[in-house]
Amino acid sequence: MALEIKILKSVGAQSGGAVTVKLIGSLDTATAPDLERQLVPILAGPVKDMVFDLAELKFISSAGLRVFSNARKQLRTRSGQASFIHMQPQIQEVFEIMKSLPGVTVFKSIAELDSYLAARQQSHENPRAI
Amino acid sequence: MNLELRATPGEVMRAVDALWEFGHQRGLSESDLFGLCLALEECGSNIVNHAFDRDPRQSFKVLFEYAGNSFVIQLRDRGPAFDPTTAPERKPAATDDDDPPGRWGIQLVRRHVDEMRYTREGEENVLRLTKRLGTKSGGKQSHS
Image 1 (cartoon, rainbow over the protein chains, first blue to last red):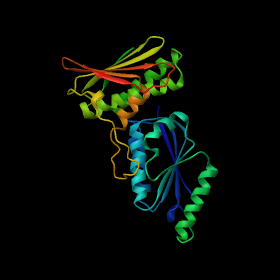
Image 2 (cartoon, rainbow over the protein chains, first blue to last red):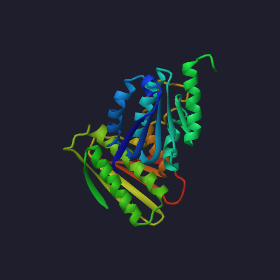
Image 3 (cartoon, each protein chain N blue to C red):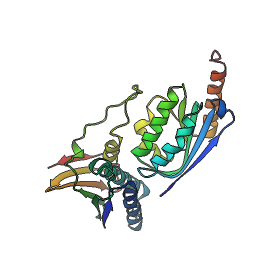
Image 4 (cartoon, rainbow over the protein chains, first blue to last red):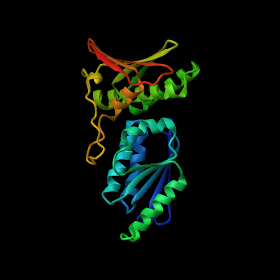
């Protein structure tokens, strides 16, 4: 099974907003290096929040978790965050291993994620607001 | 079913694809199959990356056995002796941001199969993963 990667930049991404990465298929030992390569230029920019949409991710192994973990670490150096939405139950089970790490947040819906990101954006713009 | 695979990530996934098909044909549940495929991916990747350093001239063997209420995956390789059943548990790293993401693979295998059995037969590592079908896994390990 292959991996399709769709990268969607939201408004404000150029100035440090959120980038959504939609993954379709299998994130495994053969496909994880592709994702890693595609994240390099994004993480080299000012992005603070990265959202991985896993609605159509069918399979993940530790090779995929390592890519997420590395992205999380890089984002945290700039007070950023890696977030995950629409996780299928089997993916969620694999994810339990890294879910408790700092800088990782799992959301069930876009609405939940949006309100979280809006609050974060507000705190970036006005650090005294919260 | 027997497969002989070259030591590359693509070949590991060829085995995983074959397992999906083999399991679907025999009516295994998605949940059981997912766990088996994950265990195969992790153990196969370990052989490819650590025993053979992704050298495509090297090869290893995979065998699937379906016995109705259980499923066995056997991996055979001629790499250096390595017993994954003795690998230490990864300690929780909830508050340590610098903790490297190592040993996740073996932890995932342990969660998704009921038994891991390792033997060294002559020059071969033989790893046998058994999953009881239709039950929640997370099982015992042994070596000899």
